[in-house]
Length: 568
Image (cartoon, rainbow, N blue to C red; front, side):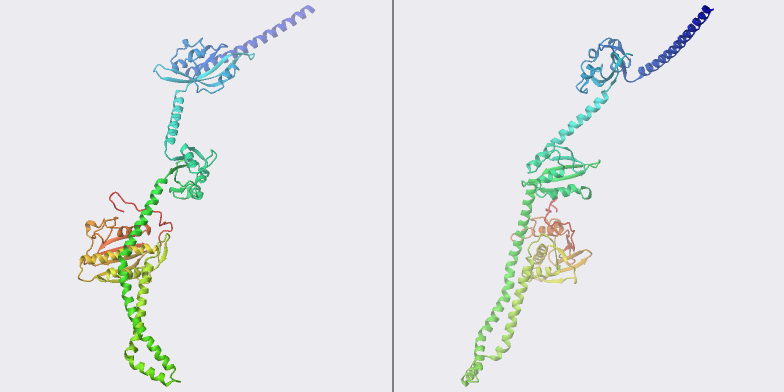
């Protein structure tokens, strides 16, 4: 009975073991089927992938590689299996990341190992390989598994960028000016060597940590000139700024905003141009002074004559009074002593008989009155000359235009008094004009003298007429100087404002008067000067000047220029 029980127990245990083994085999079979299906799916994906998959053994020999390798490189799979990576592809490119050899020695993962191989089209192909170690179930290293891909397009794009950067660098270094690309806060992101050389040459300092503000300010004689441009770039017009350096040179800074809101800055050495402009300004001033001297020389004789006439009758009248005054004083003294001395009364009476008191009585006061009138005439001429010769100013001042015109007419009297009558028609209550009175006096003098000469050339036997008028026209004052002279032919009307152009005989003009007048009116006062034909013959010069020129107007910065045709 015991043996039967033992038998049944043995049979039960065996059945349990058999059932467990069957269940385990079923599970393994199911897992195997799943792995096989997954492997098939992965294989199908790998086979159609653009990149290829590879495996190596412990010696680095290729054991497995997908057909994509052949499609990409043109190398058959049969020529690859069993060979090492170096035998197939050669040495890695120098563009590969550093540290890969160490990864191989330590059997660590690696990426982007780059090779360059020739293709059948006699071109170069760039491929990249990345891999990771293969470990068995016990963690022992068996080889490498990884992927490879064609990066020829990427390398070409990168080389194109590098080539463009190299060409850009060459172009920037080839610029004769200093160049910098900056952020809005002045941080320099790109520059050429010329910029540093210019700053150090000008007496400044340059450091890689400097902003453009610091670098340029360090070499500027007045750092505020440069900082004002760079600090306020977003709120002002991008006008070039010229500043003087510590060593006396002049640098021109140009600023431009790029589409990505960076600042493109160029710094040029304009020392020679600035010196040439300064020399041109000096020549211009010398030319203007020469024309002034010419005008004064022309008027000097006339002014002397105008002063000489009143001086003559002042002298005659004073001599007349001086001749009779001592005798009158003596008579007065005798009369003062008459209370104590009858002889003095007789002497005074005798002297009165000898003097023609009937003539002296009315003539002496008249002589003194004429002398005073002569003194007033001389004073008027001297005052007019003083006002006409107003010192040249750099900044505009308000002045009475009518009064200045009257002074100019007075001192030019000797030029027109024998050939014309001058009539004035000044608008009353004309507002003050802001400008340079001395320079405008020169303009009006030239026009009045030219009018007198035109009348003389037209008719030297009859008196002509010069009319000087003023009137307000909105924000402008209009001065008209009309004459009854010979007029200006249409063929030369466009040339009369050109320097050194003249129709006068030698010795009567240098051709600078109207050129300088045009420069003073147009450039310095932002006005205009025009010519009109006068009805009945003659010319009208019309000068229009704003009452208040723009506040930003600088009367000394501009230099007149000419077009190719010679026009201003």
